[in-house]
Image (cartoon, rainbow, N blue to C red; front, top):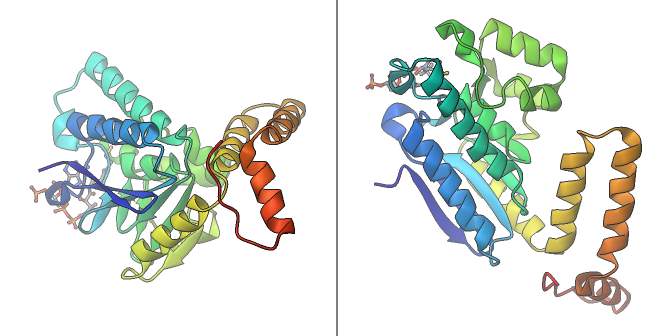
Length: 257
Ligand code: COA
């Protein structure tokens, strides 16, 4: 049984964490499988968007506590670096990624969702960084990506208290972009992914890159990155097609060239 499944829905890759008996807890094999699935998507020019979700009642209930219990500092460091590598690969994918958070997104699960471009959540979702309950700190981006997503004060409250927050609060603080009824979540996430998949893929990838790197740069550098990306877009066949199709009053056919 694959601990992380991947299937194609047209131009959308649907990636599903598949250890429901452990609430999709993240062990070494699962983190490696995430990296493998992301690598497959990166190499497949037919995939234009990715939706990530969890099988069963959790998105992911965090790093696997049973697997971590025997770790010393060396093993913990390797584990943290593996998680960071896998999540950075996801974050840096050229196609948009949507986390469809169907249940618990705790610890590494919340960090995994934050490595996606945005989060759609089931009304049943629960988010949190419970590491302090175990005497540890977040290890897969909870002190960095979560801060960028919700701001310092909310990130501190979530990380330092270790308390779970519900879907409504996640929506209010901008952790989740939208909430859906549980039975609607996946179809809404796939529909959103399909909608982005129909746009010019080079433009989508460039816009994602500029936002991603621009937020870590100062405002001047961020604006220069945007100017360069804007200019580069005019060298693509897609932009000629997009503008011509608009003026011809027809739908564009983008080729990613
Ligand atoms: N690591 C390893 N196993 C986990 C896990 C984790 N992070 N989270 C859940 N599981 C396992 C449980 O041990 C249990 O296994 P078992 O059936 O063999 O006993 C199974 O998943 C179901 O979890 P359970 O705790 O029985 O479900 P629940 O509905 O009572 O509680 C949670 C759900 C999410 C509140 C609870 O599982 C939990 O607090 N998990 C840990 C969250 C955490 O601290 N994550 C951060 C780790 S750094």
